[in-house]
Length: 265
Image (cartoon, rainbow, N blue to C red; front, side, top):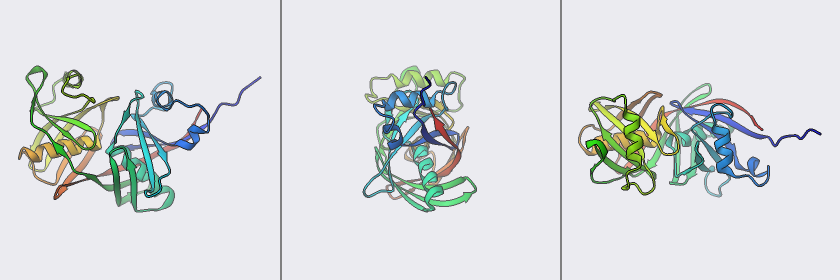
């Protein structure tokens, strides 16, 4: 006797190489007794699943266009992804034609405003809220880092160049007891008053091609230490995002592309 597998529709999207699966949580819950962390790990597996840095589980919300819950590829939960939020905004824009989208995240309500579109690629400027910047810390290996929060924890380390072992350094720093809730690491090289290069090593994922909140952290740390001035272009392997400050408000501009849709069994 053959059994029909439960089918969970998904959309895959990418923001500067930072890829996510977007899933209506009702479809997963309809499968019955679903462990979202375990299911996310299966879906994000790049060999036996669809492959992604995480899943944005989408829920209805009374006063926002959607509420999202981000679970990383390893099954851990995160407060927010700037890139993941932008991917969800692209999906809603594509489905509903809305150009101003409100998204309830684990780090508060975010407003995404469409600034451009080219077929399945969208550009948004997102109100990311305010940043909390801490005092510089002495870290492993003689490195120094600036801790800050964009609703999720970051540590920015300024470097002259990216060494071959930067990923090992980042992984070691993530284990520092100063970061009780884990931390996202940004290695940042300053190229000018409005340009920095960054590499990202995130909680629950490892190296990513880009990061929205990480780009905000990199730019804000550079501004705070007078190494750069608003607006700051953050250059990463996956592309460029622009961070600007309007008073205390941090705004992030970047693209998000809808890649494909399908069914996960």
